[in-house]
Length: 219
Image (cartoon, rainbow, N blue to C red; front, top):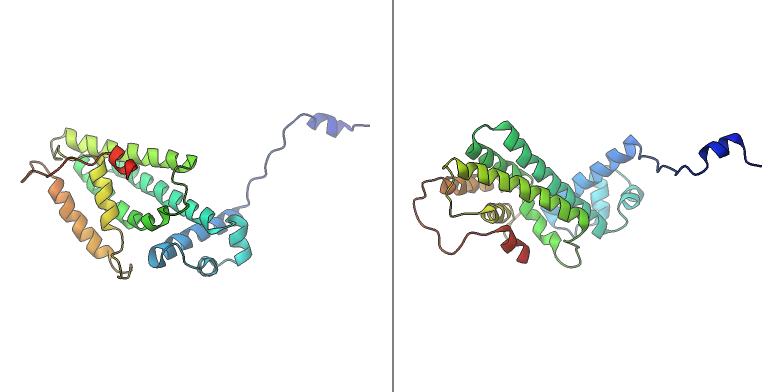
C-alpha cells in the first residue's frame, strides 16, 4: 500500500542532483590545465599529463571527460566563453569606443584564441549547438565594439569584424617549429601595430575586400 510520503511525491519529477562544489572545482582545474597544455604542446598531449597538472587522478579526469574529444570540446567552449566575457567587459568598462576595442583585442590575445585552431580539425564538431551559441555571443559582442568605434569616426570604415578576429587568430597562434612560451610579448607588440593601422583617417587603401563573419564561416 502506498505511504503518505510516496503519495506526496507521486508524479513529481526527480531533480538531478547538482554537482558538489569540490567536483565543480576539479572539473574547472582539468579544463584550465588542458587549456594550458594544449597551448604549450598541442591537443595530442597525453591526458594523464593533463590530470597531473590539474592535481587530480586519471579516474577523476575520465569521470568528467570520457575521451579527448569531450575535453577538447570543453576547452574550446571555455576559451570562447572567456573571450566573449572580455569583449563585454571592455564595452562596459571603457567609455571611449576605440579604447574598448583596443582593450578587447589585447585581452583576447591573453586568452590565446589562435591556439584553438589546431583543435578544430579532424573529427571535431564545430557545429555543436552549444559552440554555435557561444560563437554567436562572441560575434555579437565584437560586432558591437567595432560598430561603436566606427560610429565615432575613429575606426577606418574599410574593415569588418572578420578582419579583427582573423588578425587575433593569426597573431596568437604559435609559429611552426617555435615554442609557445614567451611569444605573448611579441603578440601584444604586433597587435598594437594592428590597432594603430585601424585608426581613422586611414593612411593607405587596403587591397581586396573586408573579411566578414560569413567569410570566416566558409573558411
